[in-house]
Amino acid sequence: MKHIVVFTGAGISAESGLKTFRDADGLWENHAIEDVATPEAFHANPELVLRFYNERRKQLLECSPNDAHVAIAELESKYNVTVVTQNVDDLHERAGSTNVVHLHGELMKVRSTAFPDLIYKLEQWELKLGDNCEKGFQLRPHIVWFGEQVPMMDKAIEIVEQADVFLVVGTSLQVYPAAGLVHFANKATQKYLIDPKSDLPHGANDFTLIRSTATDGVRRVLSGI
Figure (cartoon, one colour):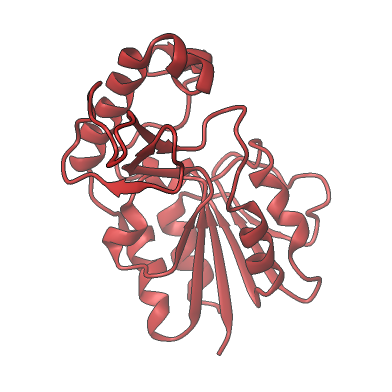
């Protein structure tokens, strides 16, 4: 069975109404990244960081998967499909994808500050100071912050190396190390980059570039596989 690997970024979720990673002015919801998305920020002002991610969860719960998410999920009826995503939302899962690797963590999960393997799924949007793990330590967002290792990177590389079709959707390929995944696809792999603004990155000249929204581009590529 053909193995299709889909690598997604913020562009696919933007079509569901989620704001992209940062605005043109370099701010994320009017916050500097270093104030809300680093371990140092959490240590300095945990209430601000928790409030920031609470707002992201509230926004996520108001959004639904779009046609691109659904089309990718529907591929599982014919192919072996793995989604590798830079996104922390759960829209792929809600669309029906069953094999999703989150490189940068998951917004609807939290983990212990002292025992990283103690991970919990939130049933609502709010995480507060004083919400502790079973061992009594404060919970934090299950997010890979700037300055932290990307624990799923090695697994993602192995997945991309095994792809028959590698479909990159809605990412500018500017955030490393995740962007480096494009260099691990086999030479014989069919490769596509779908993004309305991106150019082919250095070393990815064997990709077919489709300047399109995620929804339109995914439908175009999948009709030809």
